[in-house]
Image (tube, rainbow, N blue to C red; front, side, top):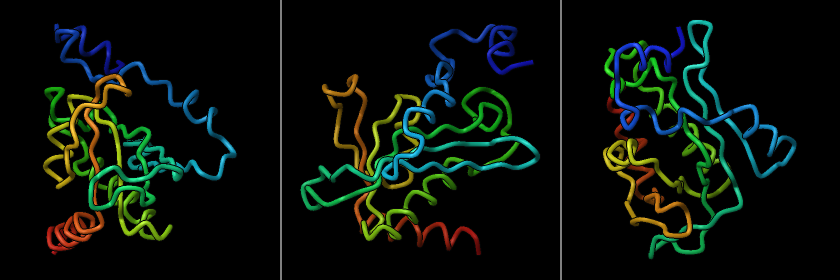
Length: 168
């Protein structure tokens, strides 16, 4: 049974469904296929895709101390519904979103962007980005009023240190 069918069966109100339920990853990927400035990550475990992310390497930071410096912009980040505790079930795998963020920070380091990231967040994910230490720069009227978050180079170092400490 698909996740959406399961949500309907359980009577979950539509406003509590994942806000990304309508995303068509094949179309999103086809739009940028072959463009060097766009990269993607996926986490595959237990024979299934557990999470996906697509990034853009052409954006610049907005945060006052980093303004104008290049960053990795997360166009899309999605964790499979069965790994999301906000949908009412115990996640099959934990840390998928964090692993995708880690990959994006590592790419930012590899590109010489010093770990800087930027993204627009769906409202259901705002608290996750705050929790991992990103700066909330407020709603962006030019981007569907979604909140815009950035991770500075300093925040990226702190994020990596925390991840390393959590592993030990």
